[in-house]
Each structure stands twice: as C-alpha cells, then as structure tokens.
Length: 164
Image (cartoon, rainbow, N blue to C red; front, side, top):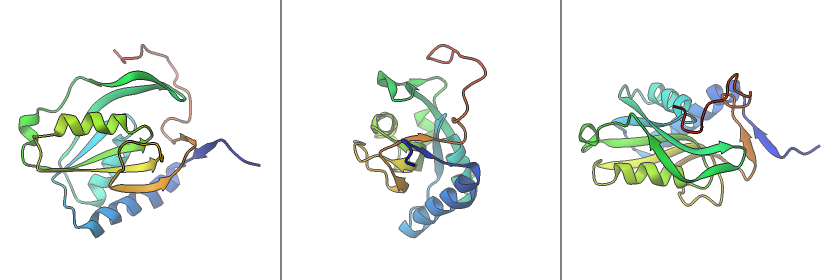
C-alpha cells in the first residue's frame, strides 16, 4: 500500500529530526546567535534547535502562505508582530521552518533579514525539489504532502485566513 503523504510523528521529530539537524549545523561550523522560527510550522523546530545548539536567543516571524492542503495565497505575507531589524543587526541567524515547499516563505524571510544580519542560514525538516530555496540544513527530501504532528489533526475552530 502506498501513501500520498509523509507522516511525521512527535517521537521521530524529537528523537531523530532535531538531533540530526542540530548535528548538521554543528558539523558545518555555523554558530548562530539567534534561531528565528517561521510561525507556525517552524516553532517546534526552532525551540528544539535552540536547546540542541544552546542558543537562548529565540524569536519568530509569522508568515502566512498556505491556507490548506496545497492551497496558498498568491504571495506570502508577514503578520505582526515582527522583530525589529535593529535588534538583529550583525547577528548570525538560523531560520527554522517545517518545510521548503515552494520556498517562497523562506525567500520572504530572507528578504526581511537582508542587509540587517551578518549571515542567515536555513534549517527545514522537509524540502521539495521544486523549492526556489535550497535549505542549508535538511532532514529529508520529499515530493509528498507532509502531515506534521502539530498539523495532522484539524483545528477545533476555523478562523479567517489572516488569523485575526
């Protein structure tokens, strides 16, 4: 039996994914000053990498792009609040997200950071070949839709697309 989806469990995420990605960062010699999570999907990864890499400076940007299974807005939009770029000046930043699908969310975050940080690298759990951004640290490549443990169950309530 084949599945048209990847399924990631909490156990695999915590026991395999976070340590593997953290080890890739360590092996590369990159020492981030800040882990910047892309909310919502990158929050768990950012927290895990923060602990694994002993980085206490964690922040998040909320970028909305996907509105459902393989449905998205025309372009990613950043929702408030956003970190003040003055606070990021000169930092080495590790951007954490759950997936580089089209890569447009990561492009949006990289453009937000451009000209403000010393260096920015990306870490993702999954990456698709079509992504316009090739992440620096990737746990697994896939072409399937991914059921993450934090998004596999439908929400109890449905809100507007901007979450406001």
